[in-house]
Image (cartoon, rainbow, N blue to C red; front, side, top):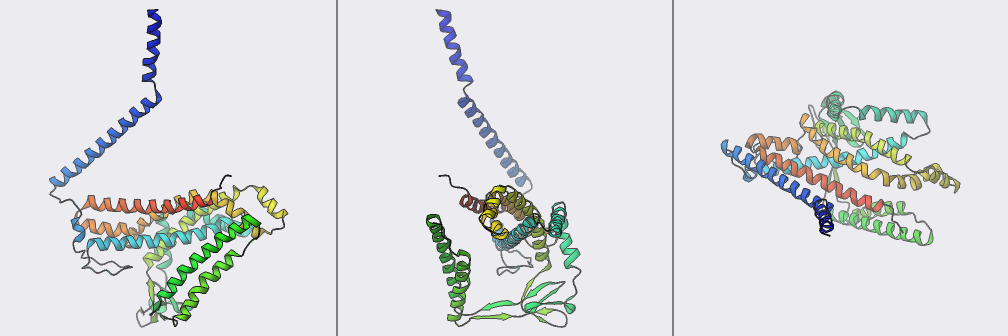
Amino acid sequence: MASQEILREEPSRGSFINDPKIRSLFFQALVVVLLVGSIYWIVNNVIDNLQRLHIASGFQFLRGRAGFDISDTPIAYTSDSTYFRALVVGLLNTVIVAVAGIITATIIGFVIGIGRLSHNWLIRKICTVYVEIFRNIPPLLVIFFWYSGVLAVLPPPRESIHLPFGSFLNQRGFYFPRAVWGEGSWLMIAAFVVALGMAWFVAHRARQRQMATGQQFPVFWTSVALIIGLPVLAFLLAGMPLSFDFPKQSTFNLTGGFLLKPEFLSLYMALSCYTAAFIAEIVRAGIRGVSKGQTEAAGALGLRSGPILRLVVVPQAMRIVIPPLTSQYLNLTKNSSLAIAIGYPDLTATAGTVLNQTGQAVEGVLIMMIVYLVLSLVTSAVMNVVNARMALVER
């Protein structure tokens, strides 16, 4: 009887040691302790090194005078501005090139991706060559190609290339008319916001109606009419408060208008073309992932190839495309830091200048890390919302 009691107690001790919950909690606690200890050691090491080098820590330097100029300034900035404002200018430049690149890369990528599946042999091969070239070249080399191989060989300002709508293109950049808004312009902005809300309401109601009755409504053309018509009507009611400042060609340079400098153009075109090659492959894979039975069923209903692609194939392919598309958007945003190679004042270049002048290396790097992390998280959050709206809802 005593031996049986001992045998009964042993499994209880063994089960305590081999309990998966206890074991997982133990290892999690161990990982947390090691992580906290590592962070504590790194922070103490950094503080000791800063004290040994007599370098003051903190972010008080952001209030100091910058003392350097920035070529592209979307907001007011002079050399007398603070370091903080200089970093804001660099952040805005990064956001501008990232947003513009994402929009352009998406459009080019979708066109190239669909073109790779075209029945036309020439279009299919041209798209294939585009993808294979840009996908296998480093992005920095693509930037140098646009900066030194395309924009640098343009004619000087005296021999500028005349483009439509009073625009010019030369070695110093792309000049085009600048819009000058007068009093009452806010009415157009308000009308545009109202038009977006009405277009969303029309699309929502049309979807409910189609689900209930099967009847379709011309949502696209209705939305276009609202988004264009209401601002135009507000523009007319406000007395057409808009004029244009056209660039004028002088003896040595062009004056007036708006200028996109070669640094921005080369970075924007390089990131757009490079990322578009990867987006094209994602789009092609997404379309291939849609069952052929869907296309055949749509064709059996009498739909042509264009409506089949637009109404049947692409909406289903988007559920496959959106998750990897998010990664490409994040890569484009982070690749914008390569702008330092051609002198475009993005966040990395501006923060590098601030870092060199102040010696606040730890704070400067920390600011860049936090900003890029926030940009990536915001991009991911937006794409997650889009992905959730495109996902299939199970009944």
